[in-house]
Length: 160
Ligand code: ZN
Image (cartoon, rainbow, N blue to C red; front, top):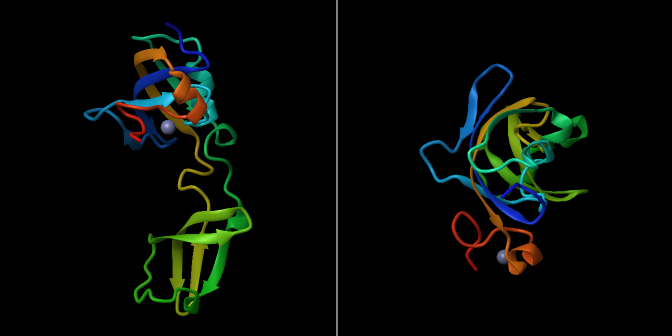
């Protein structure tokens, strides 16, 4: 069976950045399972997998525009420490949920300078060119319920 809209796909993958550093990998763990055409994974990877079948291995380079987007300066902002009520210690790398014009978004503390805290709402991989080494381990038809929900049920997916 070939990967197409409304198939459930299991892949093993290793993600590296431009410098060759491994950022994420499914090797040694369960494969990633996703609903093709359901926008469960980044568009650049989804497009490259279309038409492939079990056993195929491929390398995919995904530019930021088809990955996690470009870094957007407007998502980086300074706020006063007083905005963090109930949080005593604020350190670089901490993540919070913040209300933004785009809804509730995760933000990461990138700088702490006295009372000024700099937050970055960009995805950690924004602006990165991503390289995926992918092997397809399973392809099956999605159930009607999975198509309606827009995600995979059962092994590797949602249980509800
Ligand atoms: Zn569901």
